[in-house]
Amino acid sequence: MIVCVCHRVSDREIARHARAGMSFDEIQFELGVATQCGRCEDCARDVVAQCCSSQPVAALRSEVAPGPSQLAPLLQEGNACKSSSLSPAA
Image 1: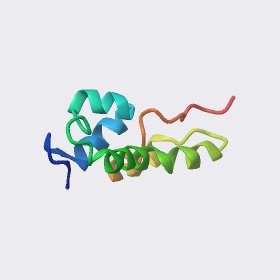
Image 2: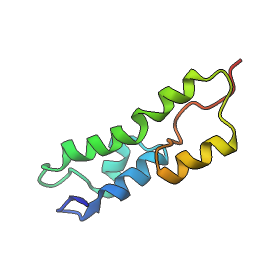
Image 3: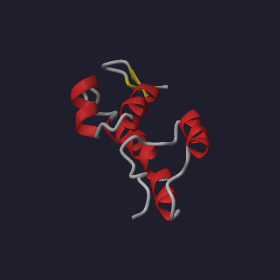
């Protein structure tokens, strides 16, 4: 769905940038979201927050980093965040 009507930016485009590790401020600068009328800012921030909020916490609970077979479904669903900490436990 279109989140920012002024700049014609969709939730998918915002989510793609967020999963690439960009912060809201970086996405705002790159896409122009919430820079004109500002009505889309809350929705755009929600999309960014949803992209990284649930999966990293669950991934941190395991003692061993998830393997490729565990990460593939997350990436296909669009729920994994590049900026999440998925390194093996020390």
